[in-house]
Image (tube, rainbow, N blue to C red):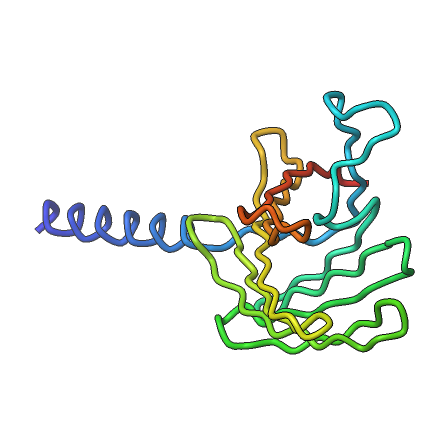
Length: 161
């Protein structure tokens, strides 16, 4: 009988560990861009990421990112259940509607966004994860707007304030 209880206890413990391992990370906090030592003098890393600073609020169902950009503050809210989220922002006097889906994959959150910019369909993706130091890593992929064909991916690292 004692052996059965030991076995049951072990099974319950492994199940609990498995459930804890599946809990998605929280990206909540205030984040500041870490300068890229490899960037050319006076040069940035291009478009994408969360801007110079961002505030992320996350609960069990949504992720809200408020970014500080040259165009002002932009706030986007994403549903974390894989269903579509709609966000609108203004760019050079034009209102642009974005439709996004956010999906978890092995501790990373991938947000795929579709929008129409001046009559052109544009798809971008942003993957949020943590590096071993606990910094937020944002990989942003967008089309090459210069007509080069291949998508352009930038990788930016943010330190929590």
